[in-house]
View 1 (cartoon, rainbow, N blue to C red):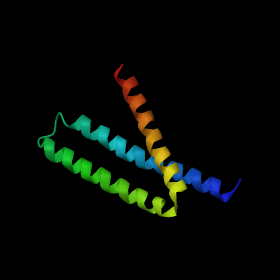
View 2: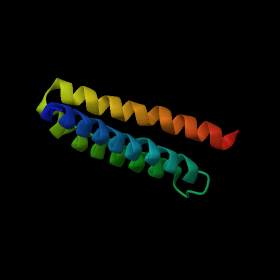
View 3: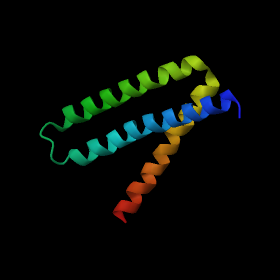
Length: 92
């Protein structure tokens, strides 16, 4: 196996980690809204923190080239579908 293959798998897993943080954080925020005292502040803070950390996480990947960014984005989107499926199963 080539070094590029392992780098691409690493970028894919990095995208999965970023996606899990982003979409898991979104799910955590939505679940907490019913008990939050300041709902708007909670949503705004969650949005800013999640987006800021994901942008910081994607930035070094994008500097490696568009192929690495594509693998990272694929992992990010893949975890979105996994979490959506898991949440649907949890509520059915």
